[in-house]
Amino acid sequence: MAERRALGPTAPLLGLLALELVAFGVFGHNFLTLANGFEIVRASVEVGLLALALTAVIATGGIDLSVGSLLGLCAVVFGWLAREAGLAVPLAAALAVATGTLGGLLNGWLVTALRLPPLIVTLGTYSLYRGLAEAATGGVANYTGFSDAFLGLGQGTFLGGVPAQLPVLAAAGLFFWLLVQRSVVGRGLEAIGYAPEAARHAGVPVGARLRLVYVLSGACAGVAALVYVARLGQAKADAGTGFELLAITAVVLGGTSIFGGRASVAGTLAGLFVLALLQNGLRLADQPAELAGILTGMLLLLALALSRERKAS
Amino acid sequence: MTRRALSFLWLLATVACGGGGGGAATEGLTVAMMPKNKGNPYFASCRQGAEEAAKELGVKLLWDGPTETDAAKQNEVVEAWITRGVNVIAVSVENREGLSTVLRKARGRGIKVLTFDADALPDAREFFVNQATPRGIAETLLDHTSRLLGGAGEFAIVTASLTAANQNEWIKEMRALLESKHTGLKLADIRPSDDDRKRAFDETQALLKAYPNVRVVMAIASPAVPGAAEAVKQSGRSDVKVTGLGLPNDAKPYLKDGVLDSVVLWNTQDLGYLTLHAAAALGRGTLQPGATSFEAGRLKTLRVEGDNILLGTPFTFTKDNVDRFDF
Image (cartoon, rainbow over all chains, first blue to last red; front, side):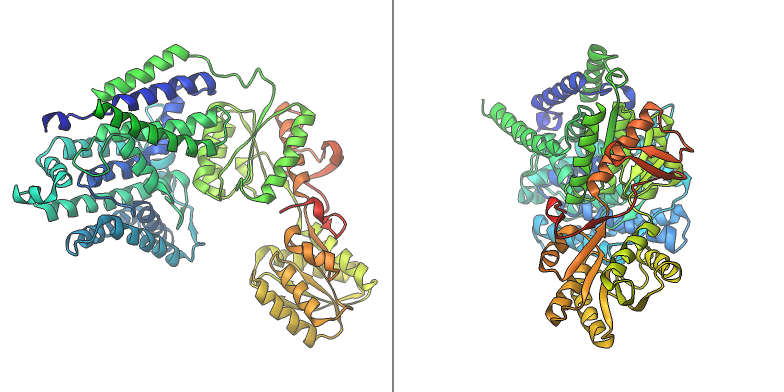
């Protein structure tokens, strides 16, 4: 267990990162600049928050497909409260995060109380949450006109160029690292993923732990929704479409086992940046963005094949 | 440990390749152009025009954008272009307010910005390449109606919805023209279609019964054109013709049937062509704020009204030219 818990990003993953840095450094325009580094971070925060929370979920052998949809629902709730209902922004923001938390709670409850497989539960809520967001707005309402102070959270910088949302990602990264890799709770999560029955017999409160990870996942979707709305200045029902798959890709690239039992928060962040560098680097190398999809798929398969190879040898 | 490894990698790579950027300024003009949606044939045809102009002017054209309508992607692409360093950015804007912030940032970095097809907030760009003014659309539609009626007679309009902003502006301009220029024409009724083909079909059938003297049905929303044409076709009234505003692909079969005389829109290829010409001129400093006209290659001299570059009179699709277009 000791080696497992010290798990960081795998060597193939760091190799990929290095390869991207060199390749885009050569072929991209202004790729290796501090400003571009910050820009990559800015564009990654929302998916990053989802991926961090998903690392804990996947550690238990679970999955949460509903996070992208929940992000959309929280964005619309926030937009409506702040712009239509005229609530103060902090209150509207708190209620949006509460919405995400409730959404996560529902997932956790369905998984634990009804003993339904997480894949099925969150496939259902994936449609449900997006559907609610679309129904509430007719799919057309687009809330805009947020205050500059709020937009600063997504568009502003401090200390001469650091994106305003970087501390949010850093705080979440630290929190999940402590939770998953440096706490008794985290050991419990991995034990659940490794063998749920054994964990139960060993005294791990399995139900409570599972509810916790899904609630955290929902809350992160709520926070990510706020960052998203602040970055784009608009709240619409299609916010966060497809984010869940990007987040899961980052987690799996990072070396967390999709079957649970083994998780790496630092690996997730490395996986996240492998994806973000690819998107950004291709654009700066004047390549069409569609290539990113193809390369992401190939990278994922390659990373998985390499890590399997390594284990086998 | 891993964080340190990551930041070390970044540092190493930065040092190794440092100072390699900034190529755009020496390679001639780079224009970055973004549609709302790369997959839409409407924009694919804009791109053809833009590439034609890029070749003509020796400009490097970057064409990228979301593969389906996605406001977030538009922001990310513009951010990347700012970092990459392009000379001019031309965008068809999906999310006016959200994208305007990024466009302002681009201008702050000395990049020239213009919009085409769909505008940003005025302070976020220098010019808007405007594909059609309400006045121009109203004029062209009434000219076709008048031609079909021989200068005098009754026509009816099938619109989008009775509250649709664009359509209502065109109708307002048409009413003014009916008072001044086309005094022989009489507008019998205006019916809504709610952007629905079936509804347009039903409304047109009702119109033909209620107003037997109506000889021209003018359908001014894209789905209304085939709906109205189908209704006229099924009525067997060969004395009634349809004209309107819509997409050539919807109109194609009815234009060939002869039920539909013409559809008006703008030539999307010319829109892309003009946008690239304007972008190049802006980048080279030959187009300045306050200009009143603009020379755009094969499109000759075009009018500039305020900060709007006008593509000119709308384009008319007929059975003879419609096969050249696919959107």
